[in-house]
Image (cartoon, rainbow, N blue to C red; front, top):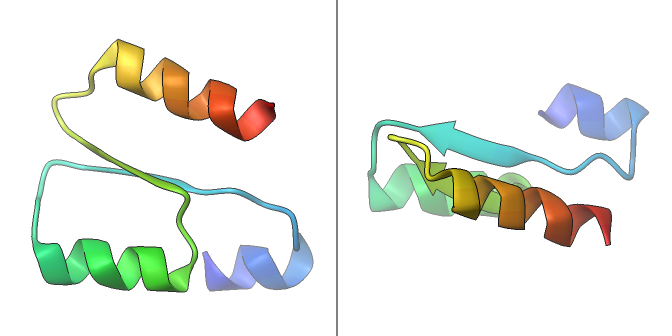
Length: 55
């Protein structure tokens, strides 16, 4: 993610993971993710996150 951010300053990241650890999620937000989605993926949540990014 950090490498992509250096080359594409306007890149947006959605983290999708089956693991939920507050510390990992906190670190991911600190590094610049926009949304965290926990598996199993909720299609409505994923679609909503993508839509909010694109608007």
